Image (cartoon, rainbow, N blue to C red; front, side, top):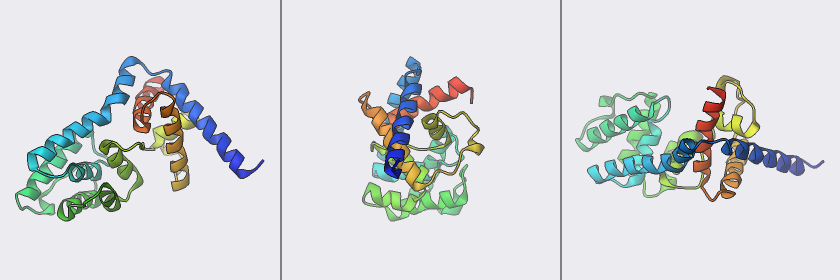
Length: 205
């Protein structure tokens, strides 16, 4: 069997596994999947309007500050940083619930004011935070984390046991989420968000 055929077979199975979890979503989980990123976009738009900043800048700051950060605190940290920046403060004055290099990335986005979404992504660089940024901005991608890998592989394991997800595998899994999403007329990030909460409920993780 050719390598391409093996890859196609794996992607077909990934897509089936994703759809299998989607079929088990409750109404609330489907609602979560359909609305989470839209609501995140709305919250960022409020900050954008409040500080007269392009939406991509605010979303970029939020994405940069997201690692290890709870969502509500993530937004508070973004608000505090933006407020500090507009007031003429310094990055060292910002206390964020994430790594200092992530804090510095967020500040860099504010300082350079990138003109396009891709320019923001260039500063973010990290695959998860870059995809998180694109999802909130409404691009048809999704975040591939350990849970997303488990769903696609129908493999319940701890996140510490999930193998490293390289660039090629991440692209393949994103394509499978797109394929699964297309069957239901939704986006890849809506499919991923809905199946993520369903998987956590089903396996109590």
